[in-house]
Image 1: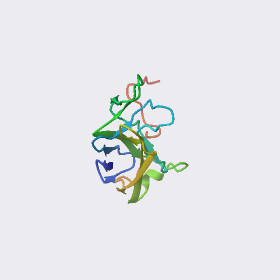
Image 2: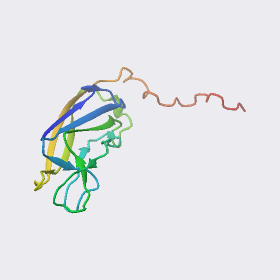
Image 3: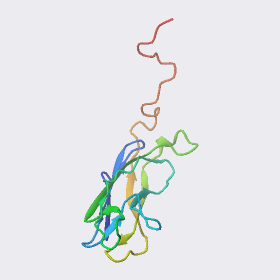
Length: 165
């Protein structure tokens, strides 16, 4: 089993949307379960661990396919074989309790990614496994760091197409 993760850019600015891609390369003759899983088994799951200011979108995984498992009677299980690619969008927003945190200066940050799965062969399943990866990212300073927050409403500005009284 090999897990590879990448982000579409190693640099970002606050509020900039980034894309995480995680690929799980599964050896021949091995499968991992997808959801729903049999009782006591672990489905493939990819998560970005919590980081202050990080907001992640929903995980996109392909639909698992029906697994051909001998010796399980009429039971029907779904999972993945070969390679499976998961994708997720995310961005770094404001830090909790700090509305000016978008002005942060540049710096290094790590994106913690966790991949959980349970690998099985035709006759047995291995214990659930977890791979943790930390992807280095560099935060760039906003060009307007001295001014108002980007795309912020301007106080007392006229509203377009609003009735005048």
